[in-house]
Amino acid sequence: MVRWRTGTVTALRRQWHGAMELTVTVADGTPVRALAYPDLVGRPEPGDRVLLNVGALMMGLGTGGYALVVALPDRLPADPPEAVDSRDAGHLVKARYTPLQPILMGADEEASPHRTVLAEVDDIGGMPVVTADLHSALPAILAGIRADTPDARIGYVMTDGGALPAWFSRTLDGLRDQLAGTVTVGQAFGGDLEATNVHTGLLAARHVLRADVTIVTQGPGNLGTGTRWGFSGVSVGEAVNAVAALAGRPVGSLRVSAADPRPRHRGLSHHSLTAYGRVALAPADLVLPTGLPADLAAAVEQALAPLAGRHRIVRVEPDGLDAALRATPVALSTMGRGLAADHAYFLTAAAAGRHAARLAGRG
Image (cartoon, rainbow, N blue to C red):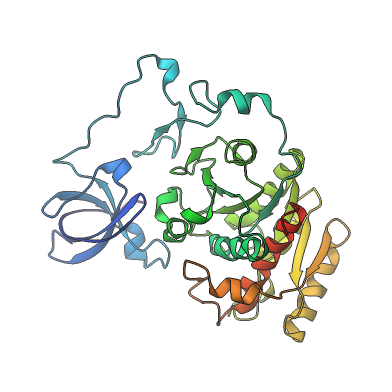
């Protein structure tokens, strides 16, 4: 449950799109690292009293280890402008029935400037869509797309399996210039466009952002219990089904690692096996780079064999991908491991990106 604290802002630290990192001194005199989303709570200043949720901080979570600012009780932000006509207001409620639920304009709502376009479309016209388990794959997939097609328009659909606010992701902030835009779907919010679900998010990416290729991953902060089904990345298989239902081309980015200390994620992760092998009912292109270390390649090929009856196993040459990964504008990191420590993970994601670009006729 929620662990509450009050404190006083003593310093402003780094800031990025949609988020502010603070130092807050709580009532017992302890300084803590805190995060505020100004669009939700206003802009904290030194001396402000803040109400904090410190649960993630006390648990020592690697991704979400912040005290989160819930409110500035002595200096609440102003209400948003009222719509003249109720039909002109957004009606998408996200993080529903939580104390900080925002009410947003959906891309396909009546008052949206994109309503006319989205009301008429029913598919994404064969657009390749790369699906991935972890948010950390996003910059690597993007690098793979741009390795051969630097002018490609790339959309990002962020699902709600991890962080709900897109603002939480410093990776996404650093990639804003590389993307045509972000669509936040389900309970996720804070993107350039808001959508109800993955299907409408994909339609918005194709027809509003005019993406040539789209990437679908959850936000940072994957949830897992160590069981076959108990992880938020099962949504990867559901995304494959959505892409196929909308006449798109699903491309699966596989979670491959020679460095993960957990046996269930070494080689081909059980997350990929469950999501693509059990949840995805439509065929996808599952991409492997050639040239992986022989023992790793053999283990992955063996694990993939049962999936070959439904999916297409595609092998992509990695020439130039390593340089593209090293040139990414954001640091590559998965579970605390960078490019050198978990090269196979990032190379496999980049290969999926390269394949998608080629399907789009951009490579």
